[in-house]
Image 1 (cartoon, rainbow, N blue to C red):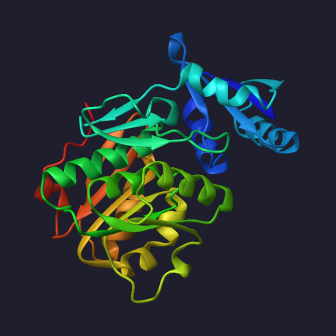
Image 2 (cartoon, rainbow, N blue to C red):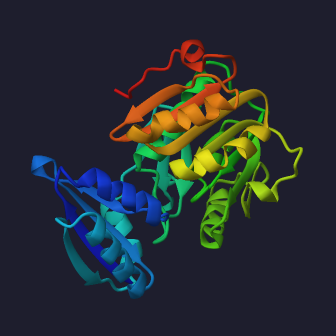
Length: 295
């Protein structure tokens, strides 16, 4: 296993994180240093892939510091235990690794098996989606018995959260390794009967298939490209949560969906990331009264 450790100063950290989100779909570790610098740890199955990403990073961010390391495979699972901390969202959800699943929790637990190729829910984009689901539930827009689509399901965290609330749905991902990991996590959480995960994208759905809720935590460019097809699969309630969006790109995504008739979304911000939330009507921001920033 190959590891890159990249240090970025305040002038380059946003560009580097955007690059990471575009190229490293399986996630990375992130540590903030004094002076607003960040250190990113990225793991690769293949050394060649690591070197390719190193070259891309150098070309886009010439002043970053990059160190290489070979990591013994057997150390990976133990490494998770050294740094993984439970993630609490709105006092409703808590994301836990499988070795902590038997600890008593006040919130709804989402148990995951951390893998080398997947995030753990610590990233702001995942947190924002969970925050939106929790808020929509509080406001009565989401209810037990509704159905959902988790587009680009990754490790399955968002779909598992919805299933834990009594909803049923489908998770799709074009990465077969992601699908395998998500399926494992549905088994651990015992939601396999409510949450189906399969390989594919929107084209794998029936043309007339509709969902009460669609979640899309993927790249801004992809969200804009898929907009007509995403909207086609929304039912009349038109509950849509989109994340994976850098804050400076949020307006362009918002405009794309507004032009297709969805109206104004509410916006949640965290760090340099945003999530857009529609819940029917002409002005979701007014309806939901969602704050524009997470405190």
